[in-house]
Image (cartoon, rainbow over all chains, first blue to last red; front, top):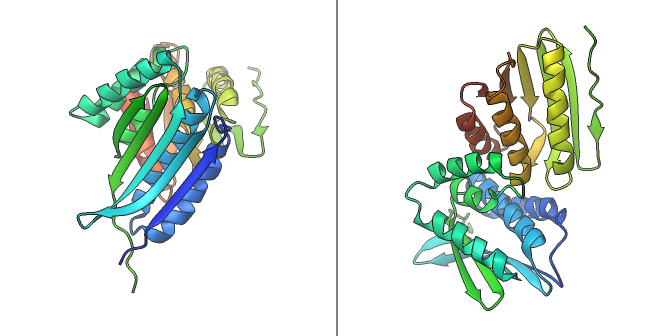
Length: 164
Length: 125
């Protein structure tokens, strides 16, 4: 039997950006104890950091949350990070565009490198976070939009330690 | 030739410090490269370039041994900086990142920087 974990953080508005490092360190400490592979722990911690910063930057008013879960499906353990927040129509349109492009990419790393080139010319935010999660954290990304509510899920298979 | 002084930056969660010797400008980055570091990083990198030019440096070495993370905004700072270096014909130095193999994110993130500017960037453990 593997250890199952679930952590939820809720905020009554967008979380402060500086909490991202705190959450990343917590995720690294926690999953360092339950996952077999240090690299997998590092990938999940990276994704948690980037997703929390996204919540901080792009949430409109209202509750936001981040859930991090180790679960099992058909005998395969996996980590899923889910963020929920409300956002503006403009931001949601941009998010759809970016996540659809990431989803459709045959080679996530090649796409991320393309994002790096685009980022060099951007004057605003980096625009790298989600593509980085897909390429560097090797996590599949999905999203759902209902009204102004946005849910983003990042998921990766992992090997969890077993009880003796 | 006068030396351009780069004041070290020491904050609660991160530090940036530059020093020179034997044609190498070493930049020690430590702590968390997150939202707190982002406003400081781009101007710091510009000063590093100016000092490298003023001292005829052959190599800039970023020591990431104690750098626990770089967020995507900090990565963008390096990308913008490297992009400017790529198109600067007066630049005469290489950029080297020294990594900590125990910090697994560094392998992937620095591979991306090396890909972006392969003609000037190398990564060593």
